[in-house]
Image (cartoon, rainbow, N blue to C red; front, side):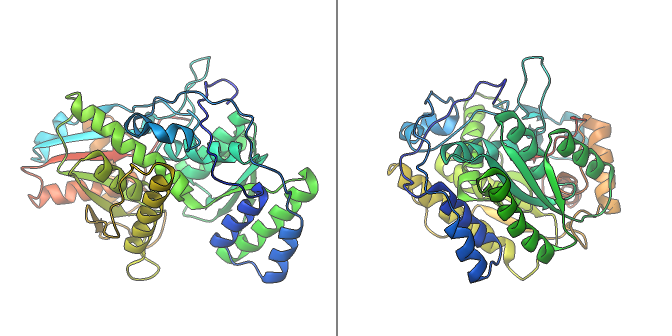
Length: 402
């Protein structure tokens, strides 16, 4: 990062030409016909991974708990961590909850030398590992997916610019809102190349074309990051977040929660927290509030389980002392009741919940993700389900950056 101190820890595991890995990751996310894929492979650079970047010490809690990971997991310090906890004293009384606190990933953005705070939210945690992996693999650009108001796309564009990457954003439609306009302005200000597609099929074709154009114009393929940054590398960011929470509990800043409510879309945040809570010895149950209807029955359960399993195996491969927890993700309860009819549509009850938290706690939420998760908290409180519970709401939205 140009003006943020970076801690880069390099891995010595991948021996593949870096562009072959980029293409393999791309093919996992979109359908590419064999002829086109063979053409892309034939053009790949056969360059080694980047072993010349200087290593330094990271203070992230995961590395404190498992020091061997310092030498086997790539990491760049981008955000402002640990994020603080906010006690909701007024809402606790109004809604008869034993204790309600907020984990404020809303202010996770990195601070520049002129005290400007960059875009925050939950995606910064993932990008600390994903963009470090891109540096390690000699990437010159990154490409990611999202809808037109995507917080992930906004965060990726912001931090890609700070690290000197070109950034391609492959965006599809979502319902219009003030936040959509804000995020599009932030993406543009970060000099991202924004490519709009009317649907996922068109985006697939546009992505292949963008890979080919990047190779032709700049000589390299982009490092591919799927929707939400939800890959095992990205998920490590929220394994680390659970260890951060463990430190805050140990320091008396929070009673161990009975429930942790979090919005769930691409599932990486939920999977990382589930794995991290187990590894850190925190017994909290995650209430994962889905932000859109399932395309097929059981999709969220399967996706969370897959990311949990693959990230667990990755961490164990990099440090054999990191425990393996098997196939079952038994600390996550998935809630579908507040997703609404489609992604990005803010329902009346969500607007009411957003107004409540701003009124009582001066916290700003969005209608696509965090508003739906907080609606679940208020609904469960009204049913008397939280009277004797310690509740943590993990706020993943940056509502302050303009």
